[in-house]
Image 1 (cartoon, chains in turn brown, yellow):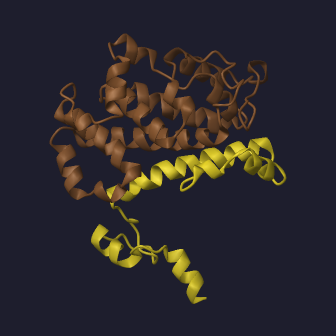
Image 2: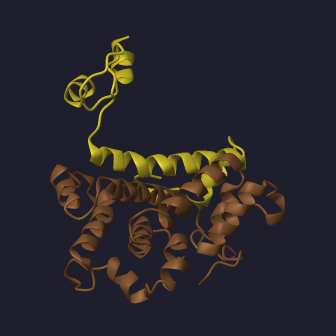
Length: 185
Length: 80
């Protein structure tokens, strides 16, 4: 099990939180495990899950691209839990595992990605690897392909999801028994 | 968590439990994760506080000169 035990479903009585957890399970990211750990602090859980769902599944940046970025970040964070989750919506929209893997690899030389997509992948890639490279010139380059609103959407998405991935990494969902809540494999 | 997350292991969580409840540990962990994520993002945006310590609304250039890289609160503490 994880270092902090998730609450059992019957221990979560707040209707708004239960509805958010159902939405998470429906999307597939996160599944029920992370929300049930967060549910120990219901107010935090509701705010963070709302923000995670909104930043990932809403907005004006392609959800499939955000899913590729999210998995790239989770792998960089070394978090097996978020690395192995997949957005059902992104998969239904045609995203495949080979493209997800390509986004975590040498994407700059990969013809399947447009220049705008490569830039979004580099934005996430560099943000925590070498944030000094995400400078004024980099933002000028982003503005050639994205609106200011889309850049904020991407940046906020990257920041929130990476932050939650690095937290989840420390909880160690790779241990036996951590997958007892029905997460997709 | 920010610089060496591999060190936050089962033994570390056991140590945390000597001082904090499970709820407090989740609260701290989520708070820290949130801040690790967002402050790096904010750092790339290069923005500074809108107001000087005396309450004046200042330009970003002036704010950068006032605040620089060190928090004003820290400077105040050091001079005390």
